Image 1 (tube, rainbow, N blue to C red):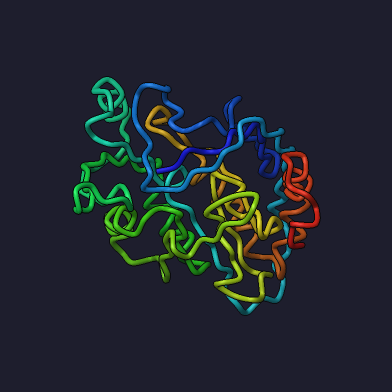
Image 2: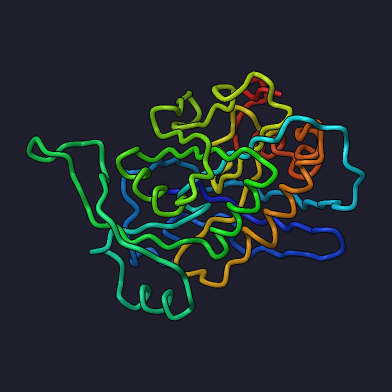
Length: 279
């Protein structure tokens, strides 16, 4: 799982209905508490702690569909976006109990949590995984109008067992893990969408770490990170699903996302020079 860049506020307005995200849109993970659990090296990490606010975004849902023959490609992050996972031995019983009482779906499994060997052996840990509310229905509905791709900066030995559990219907047409990410002088483990297609008109990535889509800032949706301390989170079905449906009607998602999020400006405000942004 991954330590996130500190990020800030975002409000999505869908039609006339407004969805206000919590005051801290992007807290450092783990966001339940600094002492409640360990987020370890099975996933990526970035290193910013003073990011600027993301702008207001308005989503006009009532729009005439355009003539489109190719399904959009929706690329989804794993940790903090679809699930949150913790080393079982480090997760306080009180947090676990409250999450379960609130109705969060969860499971435990063994997985590889580090690419470093201990005494010549791969390190295997028990992890407790909580599913973001509405996850299964979200994947089902998205798969009805888009091609789904899982793109995580986590190790395959860690992420694959988790995805096997949440994607029992094999809705993901492709799974990409840490070796598919790239690093630059600005960030590590970035997700280059050009490995999926040279034509980025109909590709969108959803990630709780905006720096993951630094290479294609016009194709990204920055979502609120999920943790076990947010059992009543409604982002998948009430915020992201309507937005993705709207984007599926567009011949090119980039102008819409630029108008909504102004991500190139946001990256520049957070120290990324304009010359490094691919527009």
